Image (tube, rainbow, N blue to C red):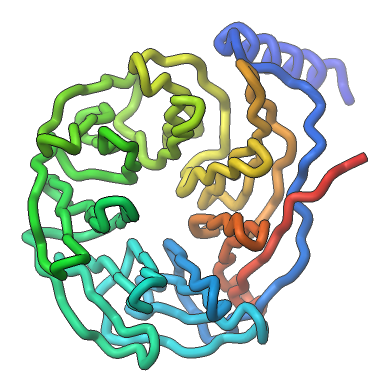
Length: 334
């Protein structure tokens, strides 16, 4: 390493330590090891989000460029079927109790699809683009991010199979997460995280962020009362969910599209369209970058399956290389 390079690295490490009083660089022992790859030669465009069916070993991928949801057989390691006729599908959720797949689309709909025969069985209509979906198994409610200009969270009651409410926001929502008492919603237009009290369905708190209007992704650690917010400019912010106070920050790859919390191994998996998955190890008052895995640019959001101890992520087609789902497993490094 040249003297100039050493100087740059030294300054970078110092700057990180200065702005991250509780983040350290301890030795991480759990890394993601590639265990399998499933090629998807018929997939030409992007994928965005994924869901899985544990019992039948199926993976569902929303493919907005093709207006389809792609179904992959994980056991046989092959593409199973394409579900066509979906307008720019985004958020996706599989409900195992009823064997129904829910897909949010850009034309303001959430479609319920019978996952036995892949036919549409019900449509829930909203006033604007639908994006992310989050499910609460206690209340049996499905929450929908709605809006490209204005913004709201729609609420679907899966017991009655009907829309039961709309929660107004300050602007279009990006990713959001649930806790027992709150919805935590990224609203980048106003550079804030809004907290919706679930009991009253009203916005009760605003956490204003410093910097650009680019808070896109998030993940919540309910056990440790932490909220991780990813900014597309290349920054991870950490907040206390008890006080709303910013606890620290870390540099990540730009154009982040998912933050996945692995509570089994106390790790974060952060994927970016820049073409990386970054593995952070979580320890008391410490967040350590353990691994940075290079992937193709345009890589979609990742998904961790705790039941099988696997992290999955889809890579887009590049030249003669077909699109593929890569399957990783946390492994101990001696």
